[in-house]
Length: 131
Image (cartoon, rainbow, N blue to C red; front, side, top):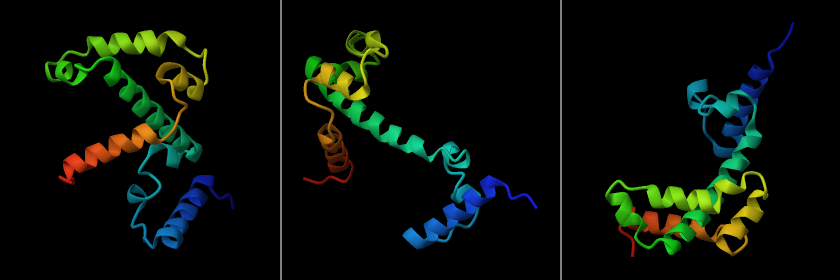
């Protein structure tokens, strides 16, 4: 009898959900198929989500310092300034730098969680009206 590797992956996923989180998975839609990467057993992709979020927050924080009117432009549906900034600061470099090197080259400080944490604090303080 041949056992499909994806079935083993689903069973392990369900067991870990039960063991780590105390959650019973009712079906694959609410379990291992919530994200395309899970069904492909490409769990290693999740670290790139984190890296992307860290870089994006740090880049955007720098962009808003370089272009203080950015939010006003967004409100008017204008994104040209940001697009130009992204090309000048980031896109033109292609693969010249590793992610952490590019982030430091563009923003000054080394890659860190500080910008992302500030973003989340501001966002959730606004959403939940927290002072």
